[in-house]
Length: 193
Ligand SMILES: Nc1nc2c(c(=O)[nH]1)N[C@H]1C(S)=C(S)[C@@H](COP(=O)(O)O)O[C@H]1N2
Ligand SMILES: [Mo]
Image 1 (cartoon, helix red, strand yellow):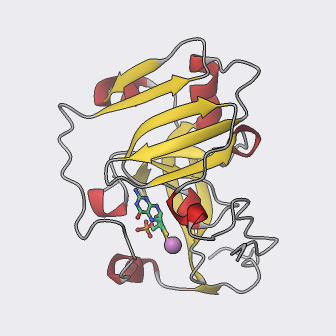
Image 2 (tube, rainbow, N blue to C red):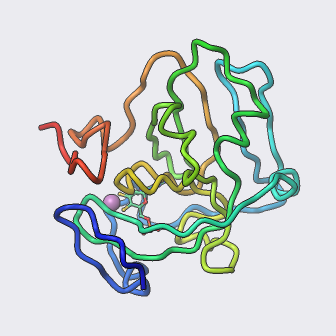
């Protein structure tokens, strides 16, 4: 049990309930993913763009990080034990140019979101591929999703296929519909309108 406080306006739910929450996802089902053809493309304003196969991805150094997960709809799941590649590890590989200040994520369901590069360099931000010791299942965003614990979960894209470094900020799916782009859980940045 973690003793840390939940952010303002959030309540804890049992982790198992998460499976039953009817997210207003942008497609009705989970995407079909074949790990033999899956790849993560990292491109944009970088020195070395890369296309990582599943095997390439698993070879990157990984860490474990325990964090709480907060949906803007007010539910939180405590103590998620994620394993994944720190976003900063990927940054060191692709070497963004000094103009790159934002990162745009595109997912296999068509979902999009973006974050500032500075926020992504925090130690608790991972490209996660395991949860509580098991490979991340597709319904929870596997093979690879972002985890950014200080942001509402719409900034934790599931089923990532492309990560693009940019100078300009491009708003994502929920941000365009009026959800906060800062999405800071501690400041309770939920909506802009
Ligand atoms: N690709 C993709 N990622 C997404 C979403 C989505 O619809 N598609 N929904 C977001 C929202 S609003 C939430 S609350 C979390 C849900 O993650 P969970 O299913 O692991 O609880 O995923 C986020 N990432
Ligand atoms: Mo959400």
